[in-house]
Length: 170
Length: 350
Image 1 (cartoon, chains in turn blue, red):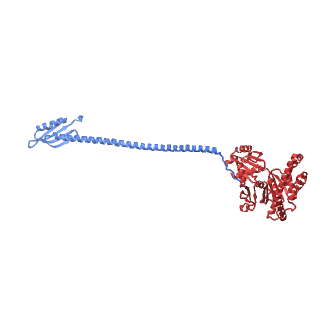
Image 2 (cartoon, rainbow over the protein chains, first blue to last red):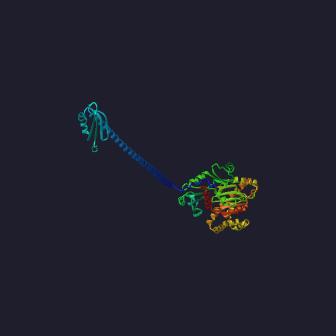
Image 3 (cartoon, chains in turn red, blue):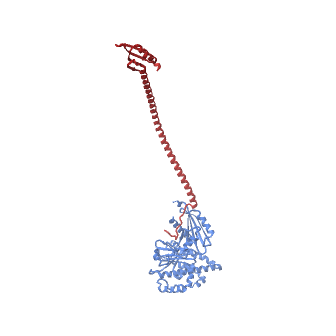
């Protein structure tokens, strides 16, 4: 029940000066805490980024390894293709040289190219032409050369020339 | 919650015509820790009082300063309705307070403002009406039959007539001013008195102002020796009331010895004069009540006086002999009552 003609003043536990000081402290404390919170969040965010990047690195490493494997495979393929290409070129050159080697008067009917050997079948007007025009160059190329002749009805000779290269020279 | 852990400081200020009484009580929980009181010979705030109060209120942030309204422009009205209140007095410049949802207390706004201005150095929390003190002081009596209750202060007189806890009439006087007024307009009063005598229903027609020769009464110091007669009169009343009267009577009897000295005689004369003035005001108020009341067979038999200053036995004697009233005087420690009220009010305020 109100008995007084005037209203009681509100009672304050802390004076205005103290309240000012406390408000300053609380603002400072709030700023410190918010900075701490911000930094803590940033640290956490940074940590999770680090983890993510680490995982990415791992994934990339795996991908890199896979790529290395693929690269080495492709390199091998490339070298193989190069070898094949070279071999093909050599073969082509060899065939070209072979055909260049054969004189016009001799006719080849069959040629067998093997790894270390060349077998030629053909017809020659006479043995001398064969010996001088074809066997001589073949002998300069191959280590061993064997020739066999079969006389034909018209006086020409069918011949089989077997030439070998020794392994050590390859 | 936190409040209960703190020390509470209650300061009560009671201003009389030339001094201010300050009482301080410090309470922790429900226990009183420290009590002190001091009187200052000023009605304003002097450095000594300021220091005394500031020292006390610096003890705790929970301090409450209560002032007993000693303005002459205040009173009580037996209604809480502001519309009906206009029939009793003009309350347009007053601050009102509905008390117990039954009657209204009012006090002049400018006076309340001037108090707040006067005590602004430490501020005021509560300003209480003397009628609340009177009501609380006689709370065991006011729920009874119709009786007059008077709070006697140095220069103020607060009267109220209660019946079954209902306020019927109230008037508040500045003693000196009222008597001066009475002397100036004596002729008018005679007319009122005559009117009263014609219309009066319950009062003894033989009693009115003219019947009492103040000078004779004051000069007749020998009449003080007639205390035995008064005690005989008291013996008619119940024992409780007699005991209360006796407490007041004793110091007055002790004063009788001092009457031999001339200096005391002068002060006693003043005291008789003041008591006579109070008696006059009581008588006037009763006449006014009887004239205005609409209650049939209204008759006041008992007067309960809350004595805050130590009135002389003469007031009792006047009332008993002239108005045939049964008088009970109860000594009141105003400051203490004020503090108790402040404590209760602080409980509601917090």
